[in-house]
Image (cartoon, rainbow, N blue to C red; front, side, top):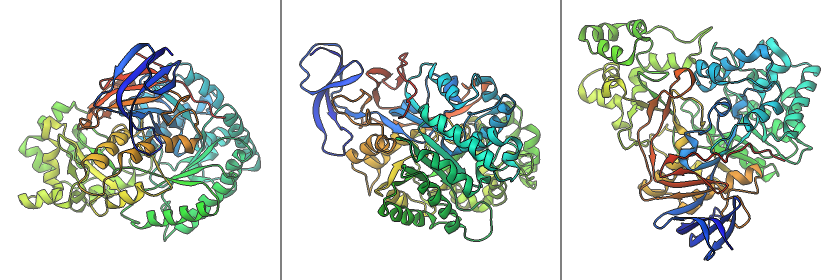
Length: 584
């Protein structure tokens, strides 16, 4: 047989979780044609000696819903071995949409997912109204990697209910019938599933509750039931079991989750899982309920992250510890270099540190209440603030925190944070692991990662661009958990299955996720020994000069999508084989 491409000499991890084998891979017409000697001729031969060869990774939790309409590269996911992403998580998205609601959905995405509204206003083409039209529009542009999209509850509710969607009103029977028909049309057009969000963390850029968070059980179950008779589709849920109400709401909220999932007629479902300081045992309760549902025949998964769910703070970022100081507010719109020069003046520093911070959250503000809480308790919260360093260390002990450093230096935490923000000419980033770091280690994360119902998720690729950079999760899993951690390491073969086949199986994507004859040639060639993450950097490459955090990575010799090379020695190529995945 002659091949379009032949990969030789690599150690193949096929995605099934078993022992690796050393063999060649022959690729023809975008598919894996042979695994073994592959003695035929090839138009191109890529030497993988000294590297591992893996299936392309499947990221089931991203937010490229806007970016996909203007950006062909889909960075940063493509830089971390991901060849298929799923968008439309957490109930947010940009379709369906009426012309008068464009700004409303931008404000929603800006607030919930921290994507600059100016970038969305300039980047979005809005050449769609219905969900199938949106799918056609984003499929018309070539991309590096494949993408699927779920229909989210927030734009659906706004489309059906208008102003009433965020006015604490229940959906009427007519509203629900309209929403059901829209979901059905989206699913028949190839949507991956349906997503909802019930959390008090998610707010619009105006500080309002999200439409999905206001929906009642009757509406939720009616919408999930539209998937019951279809032959494809998944249900995705984010719920922090709090919703700013008094008392323990876990049982009440999980009952809603369970009824929502059961109404879906057995469709696979997943929910975000993380440990929150304010409810440190809820993650265990979620796992208990997950095990109960699976024993009862419901395919219910938890989406887990390989590290803390945290944010970066800095003078270039969306948040930082000085942002509520009146003196800083006066200079906040000046260029970075000018702000740094002013802040280095001893008189300005003394005045700024002596001031009482102003309230940032409230009516009409996109700043979440947690920001005011954090700033008011800096002396305490600084004990969870860290520098990552040139070789990022996401698992540091409490005595490495900036709070501990302040005590050793005999200064207040506020002053230590002020000085830290000015390091690296004002480009220093302070890491705040909000979730998954209650005990200052990843022992509980290990339990989450190794749970049989776990799926890799929560990377939020394309979102929170001014505060996080978690699309690097696959690389972190392969380095920290499979190579560098001094205890409780994960087996490399199991980790690769986790990143590839597990997500594909959940989505019922039978044409990818494994290295197997007849499947798509979505592949990575990775120098695992040299695989490395650098510290995140702020770049200005979004429309309208918008900025985002990107994390340098090295060690990806090649990434192939349908047999075309989209990454060559860590750099994005000109190949654009990526298309919309139409499910069903």
